[in-house]
Amino acid sequence: MNKEELDILNSNDWNACIQWIEDYWNTDYGTFEICKEKNGITTIELTTGGWSENEYIIDMLADTMFWFLWWQESKRGGYYKFIYTEKINYESEEIENGK
Image: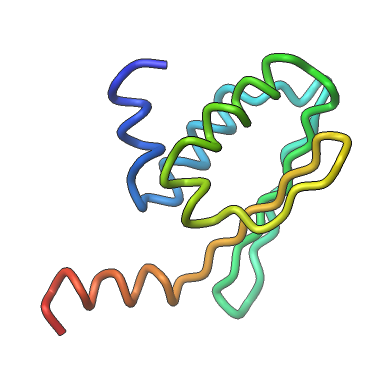
């Protein structure tokens, strides 16, 4: 992973982070599922499938702002759930704009 990619994962840009994960995630062994709900909540569920490259991605994510902001659940067997809500992004924009 280069510095630009690490910067993406340490930002609050959900879409850029998801794109990065999707680009590297091996779906031949693991799963990558995104569910967008009407209430502005987006859920991503990942399973590593025991694939070492997917597990390496999870290890990298665990040390980033992406994990801190959106990690919701982990289960034995390589299951990970992340949740994004548009409300967090809205509140972040308000803080940046001094409201």
